Amino acid sequence: MSLFTSPVSTGTGPIVEIRGVSKSFGDRLILSDVDVEVARGEVVVLVGPSGAGKTTLLRTINRLEAIDEGEIRVNGELIGQRTNARGKRVELSARELARQRSNIGFVFQHFNLFPHMSVLENIWHAVVEVKKEKKVDAIARARELLDRVGLADKADARTRSLSGGQQQRVAIARALATRPDLMLFDEPTSALDPEMVGEVLAVMRDLADAGMTMIIVSHEMGFTREVADRVIVMDGGRIIESGEPTQVFERPAHERTRQFLSKVL
Image (tube, rainbow, N blue to C red; front, top):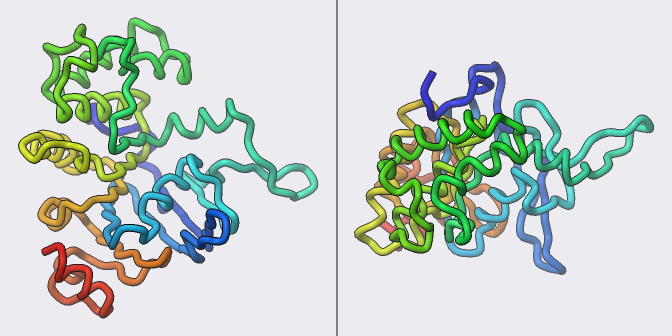
């Protein structure tokens, strides 16, 4: 088994099921009746104009944002809620939610590393605290992951001493340390200088090649064309088009997709 994949990822059926999800912030409708399924091992890239709802949809998958309507399941498990004895949906406790999130890796735009910890500590800390694994095993896996993302020599460095591209690779290693079944990426290269983008995308290509299930919000259209199994185009909180990269980029069916692509390709 690859260091980049989880034992659970070999199950059957879709790994992600999003049904009728809607979300508003005040009187602004951000997501409107969204339905998505993601198969195991599939790489799905969300594209669309700013404000389309891409990041919000990503954040609902591990309950960083609560939803107003609908449901989201990962590996068949309802995310953020459970059904009580009376058949009513109730919110999970913070501990239960942390357990669910440990199976869903999330890589943010701005790294979110702990500046007071070393690179190595950033990676193994959650494994011990949330997964309750032995520290010696967590450290060993952290070192293996650092090697895989090309940063074995930075284990003892403070994160603030690293370049943006290096910090993002540490963030990816940290997300992988808990052996997630699913990886979520929210525009992982948008905060990087152009010369650092390639090193982060290379790690993501390795993840795709290893069969990791990924949902990515990205504006890197060349990368999307190369690694995506499916491209989902969003606009106004809705999915307006979905298909293989060649179909979406070369033969878009929706006029709004054509307008968007004319500005980014």
